[in-house]
Image (cartoon, rainbow, N blue to C red; front, side, top):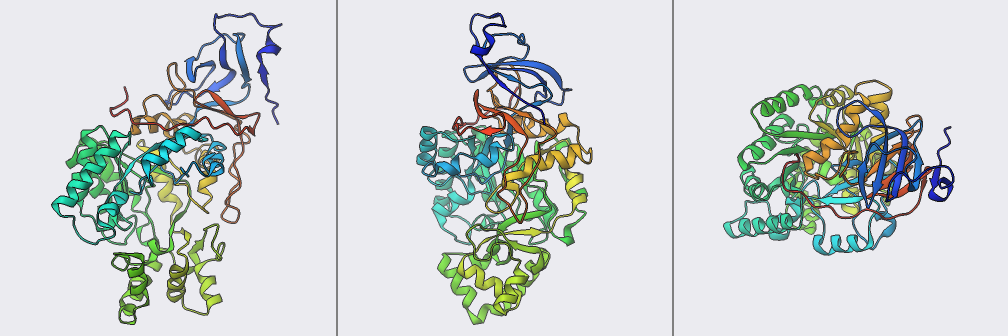
Length: 518
């Protein structure tokens, strides 16, 4: 195990001349620096002052309040996670410390994905700015949250007044610094929206320098099919005039395995035609969603929760509901492939198959009972590694976690991707992995002062031991922290030092730069 030491100014005074008028706050010496581009890594000395990187060619003996000896270590820009379900409630300081992200080397998380927005955005983000968070936080305007505020869970098109109200709400979110518009067209109420509605709202984001981020209407064979869903996303971007970013791209379900080839062909054709299309991916064969979202037909979920429960209990609807849920269960790999992951669920760690056996019910009846009582999160083991790999090596593909409760991706996606794609199987160069997790993400999301170890950029920096940068979370133990981040800076402040979490809340709320990064 390498011994890495933080050296304070007092220890340096006797042996190092002051080579500048103003000491650095932090000086990182002797590290192998991956600057966030695809350029080859080089050994550099990085000087940080006032929260910014001021040089990457500092003299090794320059005066600094804190010197980090990064000999034998890798120096990355802090990772930017483009799709998370990170906590934003400042009243829960343990959750908003974001320790699970920091120990992966993540310094910025994006929230408001899947059309969900930030609940009580104005008050929530103001409180988070006052209290500080472990990571930086940037946000999307959530189509589903906006639609629900205007129309509840109505399964219909908006009237003119409702659409105008939604336009104003998107504009307000963009004024507040949103990165763009996110949709979750697989989920209610987003699933009730036609493409034309999405285009109208995306145009508002486009006019204000935003992008379009989407959880596709279908990632498998639930409704229109994953390839048609990719085409729909591209159509939104083309008609509304803004970049398209597809979240957690995949081919879900055995009947969709192999469709990554078609997905890639559609995206490449759009990019050739000048449409800016990118995507992110997590490195797991299991997805994560709510049990109801996975199995219950959307027409059953329309209206209020009480109306959904009434339909699920209605004997006259049982034949139709059971038929459609049976088809959806097949798409999810069957009851043995669906694992309950919610921390608070009485069924955590059991498959739907096991629950049905305990309840002495068939799997569909058991699923209905569980949805009626708690609707927990589930992991579905329904992806194919060949599809994951084929997508991973595309130049428009970035790293993400989609991190949320109970799935190990919340605690371990970045070190797992590093091991899977760089170290163990050599699918990606280290430079390309870092680029797809930092600079490319910042450029795509228009966070133009982040994502690179370059002068003038924010000092979000991860210093990693390549031998110990490892995932430890599993489906059996999903809350185990990753290791290998030896030092971590967020806005120039050290939040992990000598592999110890220091509890510093150095993150802040970020706003979109509203224009392509130069």
